[in-house]
Image (cartoon, rainbow, N blue to C red; front, side, top):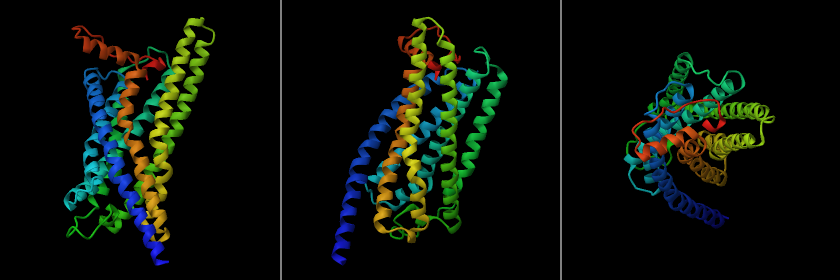
Amino acid sequence: MENNNSAKMMNNTDSESFFIAQVLPPLYIIIFIVGICLNAVAAWIFFRVPADSGLVVYLKNMVVADLLMLFSIPFRVANYFGFNSWYLEMIKCRYTAVLFYFSMYVGIFFIGLISLERYVKVVYLAPSSSTITSSCATFVLAVLTWSLLFLCCSPNSILTNWPANSHNFTKCIQLKTPLGKQWHQATSLFTWSLFWLTLIVVAFSYTFIARQVYKTYRCMRRDSREVYRNSNRNIFSILGVFCICFVPFHVCRIPYTMSQVSPKHFSQDSKFWLHQIKEGTLFLSAMNVCLDPLVYFLMCGTFRKSLIRKLSGRKKRKPLSTDLSLSKM
């Protein structure tokens, strides 16, 4: 019986070594390189556009959130490669892992705000409604978003202690104070709930936007119905990216957190597989830093035109408009 258990644990260790130490690091390196290139271009364009509408304010904040997440990825890769440095591990546990989750949920929240902004403008307001008041209101919402999530996530860094030596911890949860473990559990539940609420808001908003677009274009000429098809493509692409990147991780996050906070209630095998699933689905969440710029490039006509104008070296460029067309998403 003991031999079987030992063999099982050895197989688990080998599987973890292959998946986490060999499969994930190259994949993270790829999304880091691609994400840096795409987000640098996105920032280059967006931060030359005046923040005269809610959509532009939210998109600029999403670019910042993606860049922050990208900054944390090299530390995660170093940890996966197994560099035997307790100092590097501590930096990851106390700072860069917190930064990773913080920036991820900032981006998720802004996706929800963008969907609400599009819903209000498409369903209730005229296409020309873009006032300084709405821009100021979205700026306030952006500040509140960063502040709320910073207050939520930063204690996870503060309530993590430095180890006395390099042999007294194997997981980040072991470095947390008793209050830190409770805060970690509460934060996980709060951000988990925030995600599912955001998903409901996004699905609700784009469902009614699609309905409104259909009403607008169903009686128009046949050649105009291409706009309707393009709008539906954009809506389902956004929902697809959101679900592929974030839903799998949030399905397994609460069970994984519970296995850390209350390990006595989980077997070694279940804790092992929850860890594998969590790391794999977390990689899908990190892929969002590459897919966000692709959403800007492929689905935002004015963004794409602005990029072409900048690359072609035109001296006179028009500002990025933010009308109601779903192609502007």
